[in-house]
Length: 325
Image 1 (cartoon, helix red, strand yellow):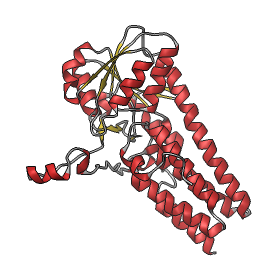
Image 2 (cartoon, helix red, strand yellow):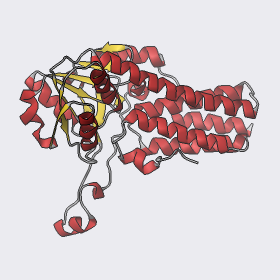
Image 3 (cartoon, helix red, strand yellow):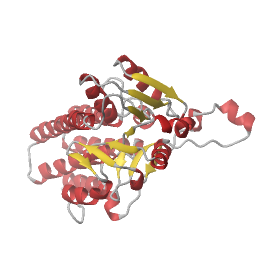
Image 4 (cartoon, helix red, strand yellow):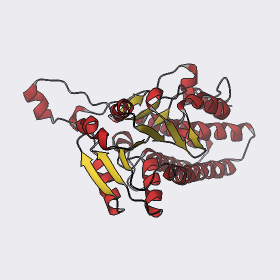
């Protein structure tokens, strides 16, 4: 059984729960699939098929890619050591629990570190529903700091409405406005706080569509931009020049079939975009504040050089080959 509330369509298009929470839910879904496997071949097939299925649903996610990479590497290691089937199964479930805990601990640390960057009385602007941004603002509320938080509606999906509601319940003075008014309100803002879907090797960040415009407007107005993100959202494939897939959601997210037919147009609805590193003042991570220029060094420390095992399809082929032997 999949975790309650989990679905591939929600993983792909619903950003109202934040990337870290969504990926943890996907890992728990994978744990259920592993638990149901009856023998080694079915376990490997389930792991392979579901890993590819999850990644195809959220290809931009650095966190999901790294979680699947860690899990596949762990599986390959256990198989090469000839671990008994039941022991391998228990080890994989433990690995998933450890990954989920790692991400939860990272959220907590980012919240504490990020809260130090916000001062009582600040006007903070944010967009979309980010787990890391929410962790920071929740910590700020615990510390009793008073903020005014400007929140964009964040179409498509309009998850800014949910974020605004949750922040208002926490006692913040919240102002919700349409995405196109970002530049208009930037003159009132002290700091911009954004989340991330992935980090590229050049220090650029992938985030919800609209966040690049927020960062651009802030850069123009000389307002500091902080991106709250775990280091495990860094994508090692970008170290070799590969591009991150930026998916689009169906036209129905913005126009009905009837409206499309009446207008006689084609609609496009991108979900993510890239924030250039020159628009980012610092990344707020579980290891402290990092300048975008420090990302290449961070990724070399995390993945080595050249980075190893960054092709999930290749790892899956090795796993399936091990079963056949």
